[in-house]
Image 1 (cartoon, one colour):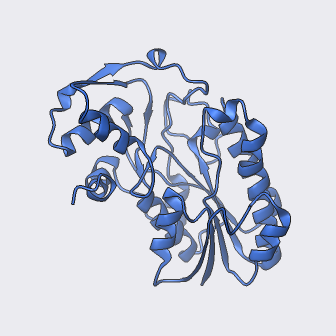
Image 2 (cartoon, rainbow, N blue to C red):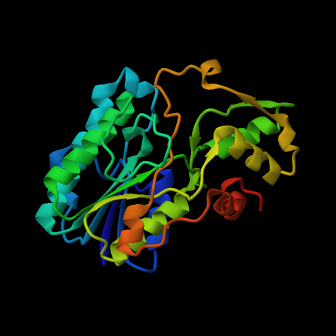
Image 3 (tube, rainbow, N blue to C red):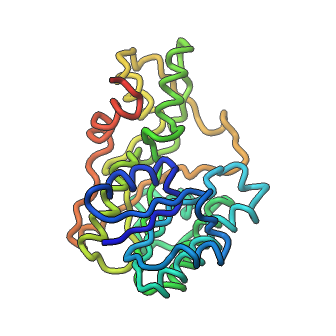
Amino acid sequence: MRWLVAGAMGMLGTDVVQRLDGAHEVRALGRAELDITDPESVAAVVHDVDVVVNCAAWTAVDAAETEESAAFALNAVGPQLLARAAAAAGARMVQVSTDYVFDGSATSPYREDAPLSPASAYGRTKGAGEWAVRAESDDHLIVRTAWLYGAHGGCFPKTMARLAGEREELLVVVDQVGQPTWTADVADLIVRLVEATAPSGTYHATSAGEVSWHGFTRAIVSTLGKDPGMVKETTSEAFVRPAPRPAYSVLGHEALERAGVRPIGNWRERWHAAAPSVLDLG
């Protein structure tokens, strides 16, 4: 099977390419090789492929509040062009999306078909990207994920590990709850979805279970052999950001179960598996 990966140099894209290596033919394209917002650039590369995976995105959540048009170009126009080209080439389109398409006011896991209700510019642009892919391609997989961390880019665990080495205590919010998810697990799930010929639709690629940022930080600190008691509770009111963060980012996995595709395991189990490579613990 011939795959094209856009955004192949990012944290998730790198893991997707590594997961495909040796199993499928893969064309890995970073920003220098492919501008997904340029129709000519997209048309020049999307041909003779069976699967197009879009890992390219504007991910600066706060900056999107003042630069929404630029975020829209990457998060909505780009996916539209890729999906249109994929459809013309007879390829399956895989669009990576986010929990930010929801406002976080739920109290139980979001279903894949829950109405979109983004509270931020970033969420609006990613939601528009989902709509564009659905409009342009009948053969698509929209894969939402959240709270990503990985070995190939900056991420929350790396930041907390660095701060734990510099400070005697860490203040971390306890009122934002989600599913810490390893990019290697998302990459694996994307490949398994395609290989299983899963029906077109929306799927959630997040770890099972749920935890607050505070609880996740305690797990990170414990991995480093430090006292998790150094992690103190605070609330979102103490860390006001330009873009609102969803208070509840837990995504359900019913669509995976219907498709007969195994979901990602529990976040704590997966963190233990990921930590050596993410934190470079040797």
